[in-house]
Amino acid sequence: MMASQTDQPAAGSTCPSCAEPLETGDLFCGACGYDLSVVPAPPDDRPTIAIGTPVEWPSATGTDTSGTPASAHLPGDLPGTDSGGGPLPASAVRYDDPPASPNASPPVSPAAPPSASSSGDFELPAPDAGTAVAADPRAVDPITAPESGTKLCVACRAGHVDTDGYCENCGHAQPRERDHMEQELGSVAAVSDRGLRHHRNEDSFAVSSTALPDGSPAVVAIVCDGVSSATRPDEASEAAASAANELLLETLPRGTHPQQAMHEAIVAASEAVNSLAREPGEGEAMEHDPHRHQNAPACTIVGAVAAGGLLVVGWVGDSRAYWVPDDRSGPPARLTEDDSWAAQMVAAGLMSEAEAYADERAHAITGWLGADAYELEPHTASFKPDRSGVVVVCTDGLWNYAEGAEDMAQAIPVDAAGRPLHSAQVLVGHALDGGGHDNVTVAVLPFAVPHQGAGSAYNRA
Image (cartoon, rainbow, N blue to C red; front, side, top):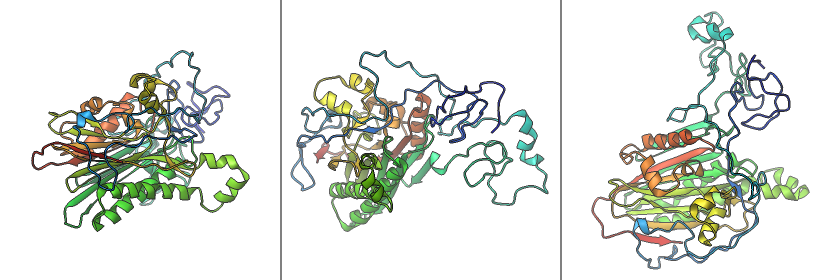
């Protein structure tokens, strides 16, 4: 481990990224490779956590997947609370760390984070003067040059990377594949980034397309956010996104109604996450430790499908979907309602939305996918927009910095329908520029309306 003459951590301090103990003189964290030469102030980090008792949601208005006629709403009329509009009971909360006392002073704003480009890349520390010559690939002795295909350190560009992901020369931890992911598939794209504070990316996504029985296209975007207080949240989000996507690609071509297909996809995602808690060795461990089941792998999910002239969304948790018209002549709208403590408070009239989401308990969720979820209650909604636009499907790592529909409309480029990948990159950059306190994942799904319609139909289940 290399030491620096300045900015050395004090004995007994912990890594600001992963909280592992540090030793005096450490330049990098031995656990996650975090650069300790310049340590920012502790972040006001509020990861996704889970409430420990079920919530009895009121009966939804509109229709369910059986096809009962629905009431009509314009996008601007969509409520931002519970689908029934009624109060929700309060419940106990499970936290990674206890929240601050209600009488405590508000948290001090964190120091400005390290600069990051809008593309989501994080800045790597430059090598010190002692490695400057070796850092130039042209200065490496051709006799000792690495063989083709050998992975070099992204920091010093000279050392080999060992099997644990650390440079053998400078000790720098290498970026992992999930630290930053991008995918563009025709008219849909998604970007996921670790953010500036977390030591790993616990989000995941899936984008795909297929065809309905009549040959018309069906485009899918799924986004999942691992619950930080659970074990293996990164595996949970990946399993859920993959399972939901596969189920939609299987059912939509068979003629299953998109809203019913979305419901079944969320159920499949839940089963995939539940199975992680039943892997070999897990069951026996849970029998000996009953509390372990309470921290089973868990995640939230939100998805959107554009098919047959319909826009269908489905979700469990506090990941969201937004609607932004292309011409901005109509109002943008939030299409989902959070399963969260904050949403309960707003729905019950106990707090304003601004007060609720400023509270330490705001990101405690009341619905999630996982073996410790008391009852799976997928929410689905279908729309028939009267104009073209884009759907922004995202985790709270983005909407924390663009919470209102108007805020999201201002953050996304006006040409989002034609450049979905670029728009997703811009939105991730917006979150990183705002502080990047959480993992950030966003999918941008354009929805084209060839002819002006009479209005927007709205179904909710």
